Figure 1 (cartoon, protein in one colour):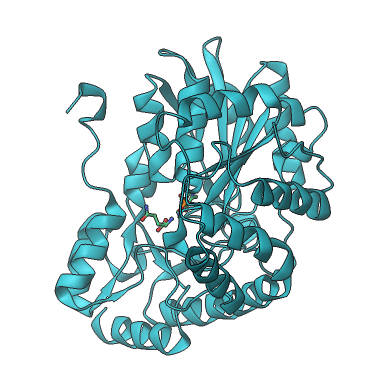
Figure 2 (cartoon, rainbow, N blue to C red):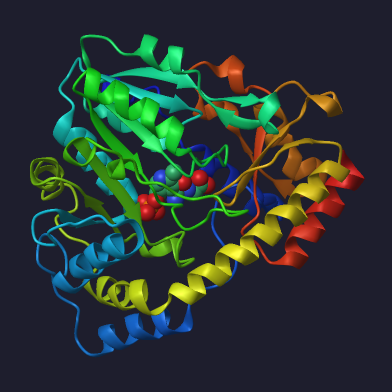
Length: 386
Ligand code: PMP
Ligand code: GLN
């Protein structure tokens, strides 16, 4: 294995899902729903496969999906994109993020990231030969424990070699939905230092209590310097479909596109057609799913509190972070590795998503994208065992 990848072993999501399978634990670790997406979406994919959509789609993605993404972006956020040059389909957000970083970050360039950070960011920055500059999100006691950043720390992280800022909102694993004011801080720094922003918006639909997802690209001066990434897995509960897209000004999209031609070349065409139809046709399903997830969040938060964990209530995504210290635990990795045996529940230690591991040692993440009876059973087990 090349030196720059040696710090990266098996991902925590794979490790915890394996442990859950081995022990028969309820898996609230890796984030995937235990119910299917909208029927019409599944039927459409099957129909397109049956009807012969089984060869390579065009390199940039099926035109139907690129047009649907552009229309969706216009409808919901007022953003205008040319579907031919400013939208590009990838194998999930993961490939879009990788292609964007590899296409835009030179060896030695610095990349500012908010920690805890989704695990693929650190790895692709390392693959590009970039240097991570983490800015830590911390719970604000005055704001109900909502995670946010200190603008002074953001500014201190930026230097002459900084090339890019990665912004994930709604944020996995804290559940923070960045406000317009927070995004304006980031936008100001990007413009003062001529940085590119790469956004990960895969949870864009999963926001609760009336919170609003604001794409960074919609802030003044940001459209021309932002590569936005999203995907279908969370929106339609089809995490295996691995269908995503990057959006932005032609030069940034071209950078990602140039790289991705040689990473995955193209993505599954039949699924792209089905997703194109659902983006417009299944908006009501998405809203109902969001409302259901909000209730599930409340259900699991109540259960985790009953078990004695300190719950850091999320505004978006389908994850909740808990502080394990009230129960006398200190190390989330230790607890997460023993929890499947001890309680029959699997979770993810947030510590592995930090560069400054001390900041996240006491945090463990639980997923609530599960059927109510599964959430209830997990809570009962935790109450009994902890
Ligand atoms: N970004 C974040 C923040 C995620 O949580 C995930 C997990 N699914 C991804 C990207 C990957 O998305 P995809 O499955 O579309 O590659
Ligand atoms: N995004 C999901 C999570 O955070 C799944 C990630 C993965 O398995 N790579 O749990």
